[in-house]
Length: 241
Image 1 (cartoon, rainbow, N blue to C red):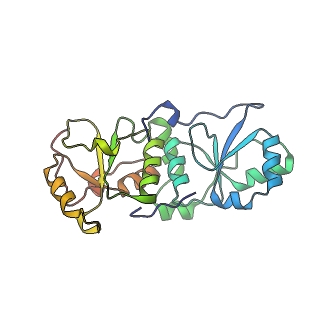
Image 2: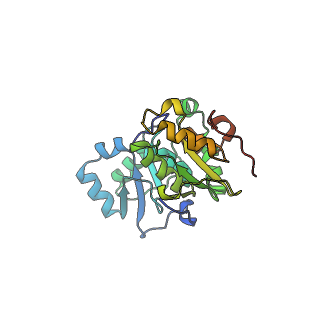
Image 3: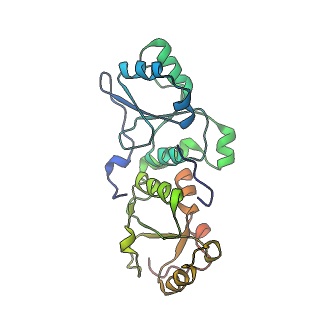
């Protein structure tokens, strides 16, 4: 599970929305946090496989539960919330191993009030919002070249999990035609590349606003898009609905 820094593909479909887990004997897909992967022995993994549980390292469509010890701002947490997937405590997993059967999940939902306060979220409310409507449904998202490396990879995963459509690099928008478009960039002063001047001149020609990457990451956690809070200062105001 990769942590997303604070400054730290494909079209959406109905698969981005959480679906209820199957009844046995159908396979249960469980995503584990990085710490739990380290703690889980080969014997434990074999036992879970016997119980018809498939373990996943990423929050892909079809995952039924995420199991974690704490809430942290990671790729896993952001994608999990965007897909509306329940987060369970590691105790549930341990109890299942001890009983050698899959136990009901009631009472094992992860509650971490201190982390929620730190992150500025209420987990249950965020999950409810995501299940009612994916955060980026109907949105097209373009990631500027300034969003690179691990930040870009995580951002792409968040866009997909939130039901948005990630535009390819070859389709950089030049004009806003009224569609729901999010152009994600960085402030010019934060871009050390040699192309800063060219990118800034190009942005001045744009007829739509640009937003900081934090719009996606905080939006994923809270399931709210606060456009005004994350509009870049060098960005033009939105003139089209």
